[in-house]
Structures are given as C-alpha cells and as structure tokens.
Image (tube, rainbow, N blue to C red):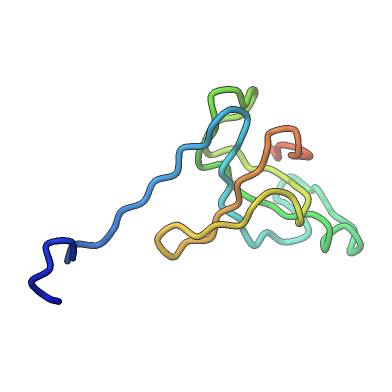
Length: 100
C-alpha cells in the first residue's frame, strides 16, 4: 500500500469558498458581555452564538471577513476544516454585527 501513487504523504490543505449568500463563520467563546457593553440575558445565550466571519459568498452583502457577528445557535451547517470548527450560514440568518 505504501507504493500506491494515490497515497499522498503531504497534509491536505482545505479552503472553503462559500457560494451565493452563504457566509463561513468561525465560532468563538465570547463572554455574555462584549467590551462595548452588549449584554445577552442568560436565556438568549443558549439560543445565540458569536463568531467571526472568515469568508463570504459573492451575494452576501454588508459583511467582510473579520466582522464579529451574532447568529442563532441552530442556524446553518457545522463543518470541520483541518480540525477547525466552522459554521456555514446564509447571510439572512445572521442577527447582528457586533462593533467593539
């Protein structure tokens, strides 16, 4: 099996380019209160998540990579890229952009 030409010994490098109005978000473990003073009540914490936009589709308007966003915890699709968790969500599912 080691001589099999289909076996590649170098690590696989994955990138994810969202299509249309999809956005790729890296979930973060934010506190309930941001530096700007935004406080989420305990009941909202289970329903909402924070993340950083890492890629946007061509139709995802008013967002840029690096933006901090708030989104429903159950929105979109959970994926793993090279061991890193990411979320793929439609732009319209995002709740807010957070400005610190």
